[in-house]
Length: 98
Image 1 (spheres, rainbow, N blue to C red):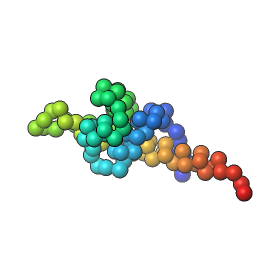
Image 2 (cartoon, rainbow, N blue to C red):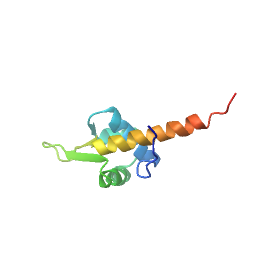
Image 3 (cartoon, one colour):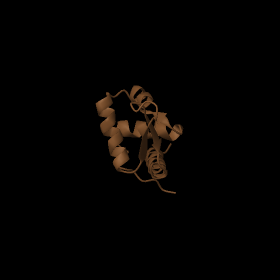
C-alpha cells in the first residue's frame, strides 16, 4: 500500500490532533487543547477544518454543553493513516545508502 499526503491533515496542529484521536476512541476537546498547546479559538479553527473535511466528528456532552468530545471518523482514520504512511515512505526513501 502506498500512502498519500493529505493537505488537510498536513499542518502540524491538525496532524497532532489526528494522532491523538487515532490513539483514543473519544477525546475531550479540552484535553486536545492542553496537549496541542493552542488557544481555544485557534483549536476551534483547526478542528473546524477537520470537521469540514469529514475527518473529525464532534459531540457536545448532554449534561454540560461546554464539553465537546472529538472522534476520528472512518474517513478520517483512512486519511490520517495514509498520510502517516506517506511520511514514513518519504523518511525511508531519504535514508542514505551505506
